[in-house]
Every structure is written in C-alpha cells, then in structure tokens.
Length: 153
Image (cartoon, rainbow, N blue to C red; front, side):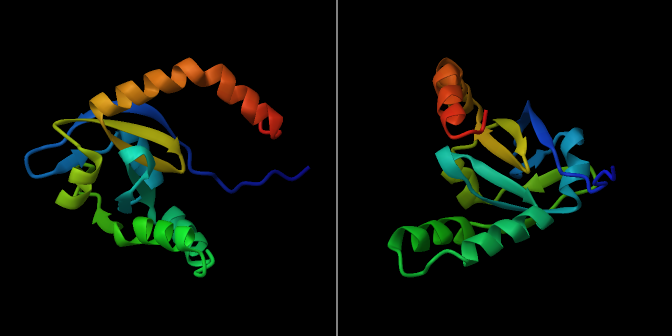
C-alpha cells in the first residue's frame, strides 16, 4: 500500500497572546510553520477574525468566487469575507499586524485568544471566546448527536 505523503496543515490549540499598542500580535510558534511567511486576515464568523495561510486562502477565495451571484445571501457572504480581507506578512519574531477595522470588528482588546481550527487560526476577544467556549462545552453532547445523524461522527 502506498501512503499519501502530502502533509495536511493542522492548526490546533488555544493560546492567550497580547495585542501590543501598535496592533501587532505574535502568533504561537507552533502555528508559524504551517502559516508560512504571509497570511490573509479577514472577518470571521461569530465576531472573530480568521487568519489563513496563503495556500488555504486561495482555496477559500476560489470557493467564494464560485458562489452563484444571483443569490443575495451568497453575494453578501462573499463581500463579507473578501472585502474585509488583508494580506499580512509575519515578521521575524512571528507577529502580524491587525488593521483597525478588523480589530474593531472582533472587539479585540489587549488579551486575545488565538485558536487553531484545522486549516485556519481564529483571533477572539478573550472574554467573548471564554463565554462562547462555555456555551459550546455545555452543548457538546447535542452537537455530537447532530454530527452523528449526518455521518460525521
């Protein structure tokens, strides 16, 4: 049997990092190899920010481009993701710059929860993440059942 040697990016874990006064945040060292030297930051769902490696962003933006333009909801979602997207270099010590409009969208303060979610990183207001995580943890059994119904678990 021949194994697929293609490595899949795996961004997992939860960290608390500081957003400095110049709106820079250091990404966890464990994430930097997977992210590369440049990322795309955009508005995410649930009022967080999504941070994508360039290769992954290309796939996401291609899928958004394929959405039917005739439907208002798909046009709106494409605009939401693409108009809010910015490229950011990762500097020599692993920091990215978060533009004001994205910082404001996510309500980021000094302490930021940095979450690895498979192929992307999410940046959350620390308090909002803590509350969200608490709600999801209480619903884990119900969510698992729903995923079981559609064959995921």
